Image (spheres, rainbow, N blue to C red):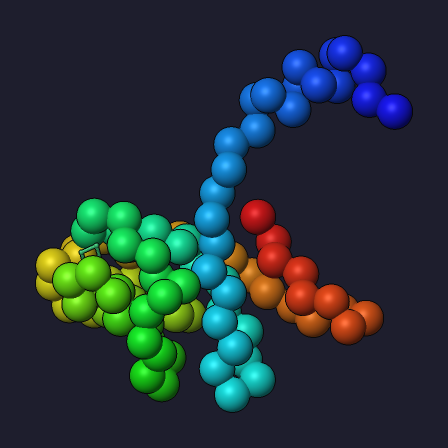
Length: 92
Ligand code: FES
């Protein structure tokens, strides 16, 4: 059971959306927000190790997070992923 103090502490959490991709058995986790204008990268097309933003076409390397073409220039955040005991774990 949560105490009143615990509930107050939870109010300090921020929500972060992370996109998880499975590319031929290799898992990649990146921020689900394009650095151009926040497009949902989880809805983007995957080709090899890149994802293309569905809004304006910027693409990002899934391993490094680097922006590969305009209109995005800044990288997206990447997260370590591992599979353990049948679960996918993302290090945040
Ligand atoms: S929001 Fe992704 S390319 Fe514009």
